[in-house]
Every structure is written in C-alpha cells, then in structure tokens.
Amino acid sequence: CNGMSDAVTLIDVQIIDGRGYVWNADDAYRLRETYGIVGAMIGGIAEFRQQNRVRGLPLQLSPEEVTYLLREERIVRIYSMDAFAATVRLAEEGVQRARRPHGDSPSSSSDEQDEQDESDDDQERKTWQYALAHGTEFVIPNEGGDADERQWDCEWSFPHTEQDRWRSLVFTDLKKKKYCITAGSKFGCDYLLYPGDPTLYHAQFCVNVLPIDEPFVMSCLSASCRGSFQARKHLLLASVDGDGRIVYTTAGQLGGFG
Image: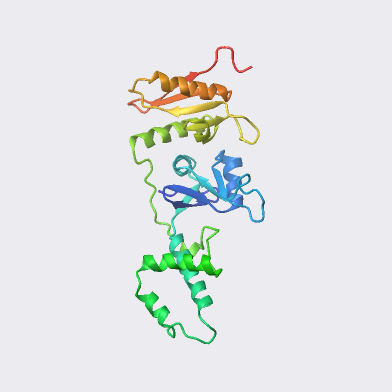
C-alpha cells in the first residue's frame, strides 16, 4: 500500500495507532508547501517557555491525510516501529548502569536476580518509575528511529467503517478543489476549510460529514449553524450517495458576515 513515485523522493511516514507521523522538518515543510497538507505539530520545543503555544516535530497526520497522500499523491511510504519497546529497553539499560556499582557484574545482586524473574509488564513499569524517582537515565525517542529498525511491510487499512469511507471521500474531493483542510474540533465540526495556508487565511467553511439518508435533527442543525456563523464561517454539509457522488449543502447568513 506504500505510495510509489519515480520522479520525486518519497516522504517517510511512521504509523502509530492509525495515524501518521513525520519526523523530518524538510518533509513536513514540503507536505505543507507543495501538497497543502497541514497536519498538526504535536511535539514540544526545547527551552521554549510556553510550550502549549508553539509546537514542534513530529507532524501528526490524520487518517484522511495519510490516505490522500498514499492513494492520490503517491508521495509517501509508510513504516511501523515498536518505539515503546525500544524506549523500555534503552531505559532499562540506563537504570541498570545507574544501580550497579563500578566493578560489579549484572548477576552480583540478588535484587537484580529477582527482577529477572518478574513479568515483563512489571519490569517495564518499575523501569520508568525507578528512573523518575531516582533521577536516573530514561530515554524517550524523539525521532522516527533508525532506518534499519523500521518495518516497511506494514499495511494501511483505512477506511475501516462506512463513516470513515465518507470522510475519506469528502476529504479527497475537497483537496482536489485546492482547499487546505484542518481538523475542526475546536469549532464543533469535522473539518475547517481554508482557501490557502491557514497562517495566511481564515477558514471559510465549517464542514460536517453526514449520512445522506438520515433526516436532519433541526436542533442540531440550528446549533451547527449558530456555531459556524458566530465564527464568521459558512456551514458546509457533505454527504456521499449510493453511487459515491458527494452532495454539498451550504448554509450562511443572508446578509453575509459584513
């Protein structure tokens, strides 16, 4: 399922729990500038006092963004890696070095022998608890791992449900219409639609993806309209019919937003 391209260099995307992560700054910039994929920076920036205001790598991609890049742009290749297992292993090595006096072998302590008899889950739990309590070494990965640790045979199975399929189809169609799309949870919708880069433009539409064969609940429709209009955005309702065609319905104030 990995994207294929002979003309350009593929972008590596790590898959964790159904979402994509880009660890390279140049790749994140390229996705935004060339393909209009915004994603969400979720990492902290070292020594920045207000880390909840400015985010850094990795760039998190939604399932719809990964699907679009794989199947439409064909510009990415995906991989998986057991990052948690690597973290536990490295942290355990640091803890053992800190706990062992110089010149002692790993088997010279009865406590260490007891630890070997414990379950893996207990060992992992005590590793990070001990590291935090005693100020010893604890390693947290801040990159996508070495190339030789990556598993390139992972499969991308999204969409999983009919709702996922609708969302993916709507997302792809709107991308083909040259919109920039971000998550719309802060405005109570599925997506926010921008005419260009979100750093340069305000969103024009709040998008909700709805089943085409279900009637509107007027109270919910009224609440969606009110939320969109107060944010000075049009409400865009998107549905997919039985033939895969996308039907859009737009709601806006008669007098505009001034």
